[in-house]
Image (cartoon, rainbow, N blue to C red; front, side):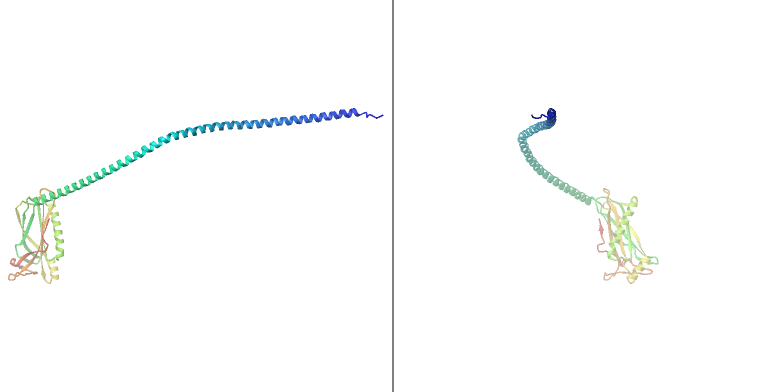
Length: 315
């Protein structure tokens, strides 16, 4: 007879308890796994849902962009015709503008030529006017001319030398000569190259004298003349300096200048002459320099004026 352990029921109960515990533990694990899976799937679903929303937005945006692109394309297509027309119109206007510019350029050239011709005509008229005015002045202005002659012997003394000279001025023009002023000087000797410069200096002095003494100056009417007698003097020192160079001889030079102006315009005219004084051989007519003296006289009969070469000046 087999022996049945007295603790067999107890063991079975224990095993059942262990199995039940293990099953419950497994179930808990399965439940935990299921919950975890559910949570993960929920998270994944949320992610997918968020992506779906973004995709929908992107799709909407893409649709809007596509529509805008379509509209733009349509506008471009529609506008291409207008642009072409505008380009044609612009080209036409450009050609018209070029033609107009060319026409204007030709017109400007003609105008410029007309202006040039007008300026030339004006210049010619101005030149002609000046010529006419000058011709009128020359034909109507006064012309004062004078001549000089010796009226007394050339006399030497301790102070120098003196000689009498007569100046006769005539107005050969067609209008009065106003403000007439004279100046006459005698120099023991002056080199020919310096004579014209000295004449200019004396005429400038005469002009200044006339400006100061305008009220006391003479007026000479057409066809009239004025006679003036002058006593011209040479300083002893100037004579001695000349005789040292010219071996005891002098060749006096007389320079005379008359200044006047017309009555119809503001202008100044001058007439000037240069004379050389020599002695003359009554038999041969030859001329010689004058022998300087301490005291003495050179008779008027052997004294003469000879025009200096180029010594007549008038304006």
